Image (tube, rainbow, N blue to C red; front, side, top):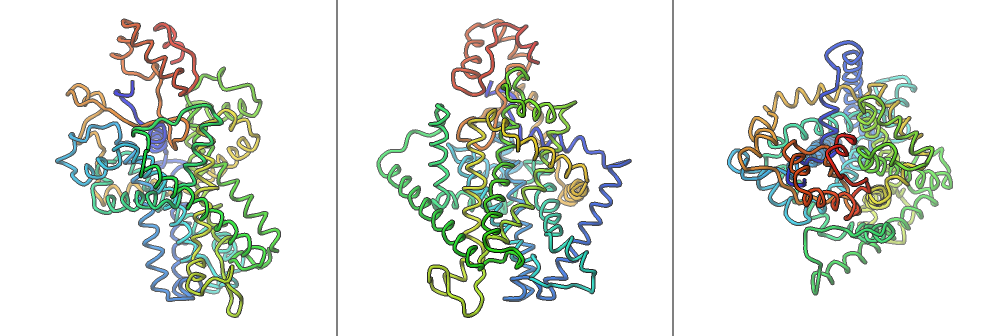
Length: 530
């Protein structure tokens, strides 16, 4: 079944979101107009602040550098987010189909889909997302007491003090817009050297060992779950194993140092957090926000994992049942709504965490742990908080959710935050993202992938059917549907006529621990689940 018609649930969901937006008329049009207006006003305010030297980089260095950092970070974020959708979505597709028409896309996919490189890319990419958000915060977040154009304090507080302006800019321009185009025009989106460069940077971050503590968490989670981590590569041995474990130890040491330095700075009041918040409260706020980000990151993994599990197999927890009932109500619109609201919520928390953890040493104050001024200047750019947030507040929670999705949903806070995310989506704050996506698609000349390589059925008819080496389940940050009910008709016929094939499909479903669903014994079983 892995060789026929496989895409990730993440990409399927983005297709669903894109195809079910009602921007053209009624309430959707009103929300889109208001959303675009708020975005334009937010961008104007951010640019005005930077021009006046009212942000950290523009004040400490020069406004020109702040503009370069902000525009560069948002631009790179569009490729990080859109590139993820493209690389994951193209994994099943035979590269020979687009080798000539999209040579740069072929280069990227050939590298990303070799061995476990897609896992490595996703790990490095996660740090890039956090780092770009922290960079936007450094370039665009207002300094204490900042004013602009004589605007009322209430306007300054709503758009700048709360970070709403930066949140709208990051979500709509840097993330949702690129995700929409990146999942439907995958070949065109990454057919450039910028995409290749971004892929190599993400792979380089993973290779550096900076995030290798995540692999230790991955192994621990797999052991607790009693399930193996499936890999496309042979076990490490000799020098490779030694190099891997040395990087794991280095990453653990860096992670511990990041936490220690951040806590020291928080207790000493040496961060960019709002002056009105006392040190003790700032420490509590730091850990609470880390948990909120982690919960939201894990929720999407857990939701994807249970999306196709029958209702009677989703456990006995009251909150797990309430969550699934709300999430999959009707045609599943709430799952799409959650993804949009989640994006707003996660980015909001990341900006606050960036403000809480970014170290700021006033003139005359001692450096953290007595380090040199040059090293302290490096710390002041927020890299320590970005590293800790990536591992402890993002990747680790996703790994836990991939191994224990039903237990994850049993947490009452999951239901609470699902409600919050749906409320945020209902406001329509990010509705303008689809306007931006349409403009981007028109200007760039993007076309849907079917124009170049046909549908999955057409590719199979040409004996160029889809294939994939992607692994899902424990220790992986994405999920794949492996359900016979979703198979093409030809495979269903084969399942009915050949007991050996039926046995193999059941071994994928249960024997390898992918989803724990019941075995299929006949076509009636398949029809019942469908």
